[in-house]
Image (cartoon, rainbow, N blue to C red; front, side, top):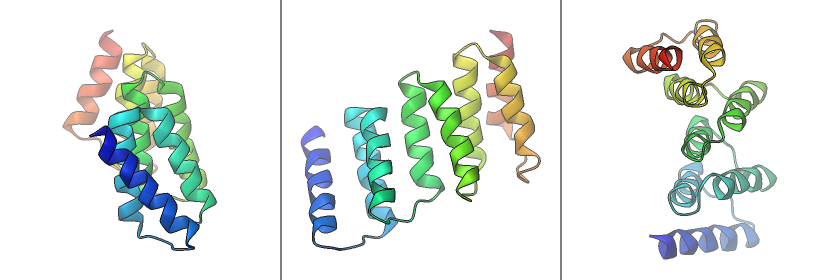
Length: 141
C-alpha cells in the first residue's frame, strides 16, 4: 500500500510539473492514500501543496486531513482546519463536525465538543445519531 501511495504522489507531482491541473477527485485520492500510509503530516502537507498548485479544494479534501489528524491525536489542529474551511468558504458537513467532535472528546475537551455541536445549527446542519453519540462520549469522559 505504501508503494502505491508513493507512486500516486509521484504521478501527481509529475502532472503538476507538466502544468496539468487534475480533477480534485484524483488529488483527493492521493491525500487519502498518504493519510493511510504516512499519516496526518503528509496528508496536510499535500493539502497545502494542492492550494499552492491551484487545485480547488472541497469538503472531502479537508475531511480526509481532519480524519488523519484525529487518528494521530492532533485534535487542536483538526479543529483549526474546521475553522479554516469556514474562512475559505468551503461548506462543512456532518462528517466534518462529527470527526471534530469525536476528536475533542478524545482529547478530554467536552466544552470544545459542545461548542462544535452548537456551531452546526448556524451552518444549517442537523446533528445526527453519530453527532450525539460523539458529544455524549465527550461529556461522559
